[in-house]
Amino acid sequence: MPAKLVEEGPWAGWKCWHARPEGRFVDHLGDVYYREADGEVISAIETARRHANGLGFLHGGFLMAFVDVAMFATIRHMLETQAAVTLQSSTDFLGAGHVGRVLEGRGHIVKETGKLVWVAGTLTQDEGAHLVAQWHGILRKVPRADR
Image 1: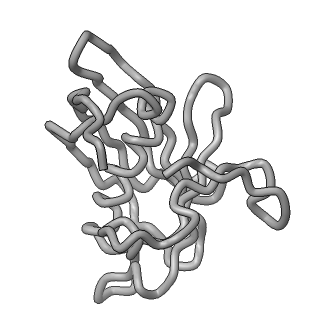
Image 2: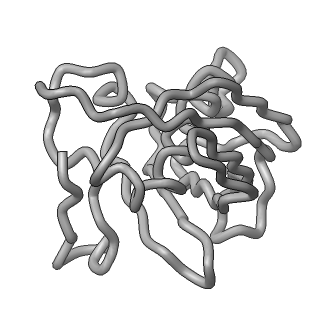
Image 3: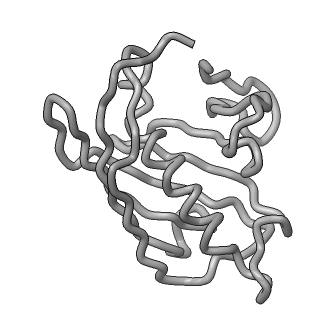
């Protein structure tokens, strides 16, 4: 699904990646926004109680799912002509994520070959001031299947 430019409200100027539910897993995360800034892609999501663990912090499973979204946001420009799948993803938890604060994924391409893309980045809150996790992964480019 093509991203939709948000024209009003707090996300004005960002693109909304999942602007409408499509019945897929990522729909359960919530609306995902992204933009490019200073050579990296920033993806963002508003967090709520449904993203919490039993201690009231952001659940590790939610954080890892959002890492996967951030990896694909990082290569979003490639996805217009091809698809990709996750081959490897690693997440290092460095601080507790706080419910009710925007979670940002900042990513960049480390290396690209004909079939593989290595990406790395961080999850932060408070506009980058609070480091929640660092991540890296490998994505494999695949032909886009007709739907």
